[in-house]
Length: 183
Image (cartoon, rainbow, N blue to C red; front, side, top):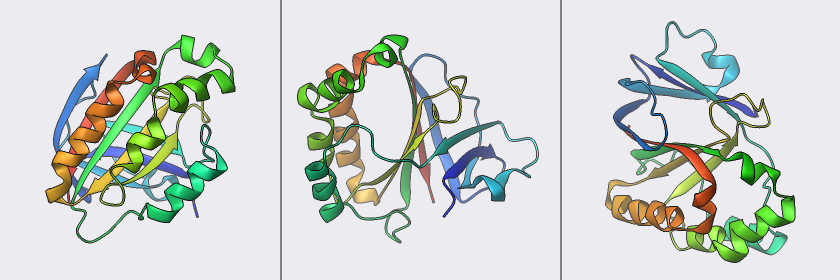
């Protein structure tokens, strides 16, 4: 399985972009479609509006018990009913990266309840996190979070995102773009 994925804004693709909006900081250029796939399949695209890349990697801030709980209820991507999606690229501040791993964990879960918030919305909302900082600190984002859900779960997805944005962890976000899509 390829670990490096590209998200390419193009004139055609499996996902139609409904909206691109800046939550914090600079947005991304408009585009009509998004193509997603392993880097080896998408490097040949001609003139994409933008390309984001991320690596599927190990989880960084969860405990074994939390991981087991997630695995029990989280479903995979590409479910037939999940025709709605969101790509949310995020960049965190230098202050976040100056913290030690245990300090980030304390903010991430002990104070912000990131995993517990996410668990409330499983299994209807599936997600996969891509790490960009593992590629280079010069990437425009640190994380690319990909979500998929059925249309009847859009309200729940919006609640999930609002809950996360209200946490202490989000005080460390200095760029966030919200891209909504349909298949």
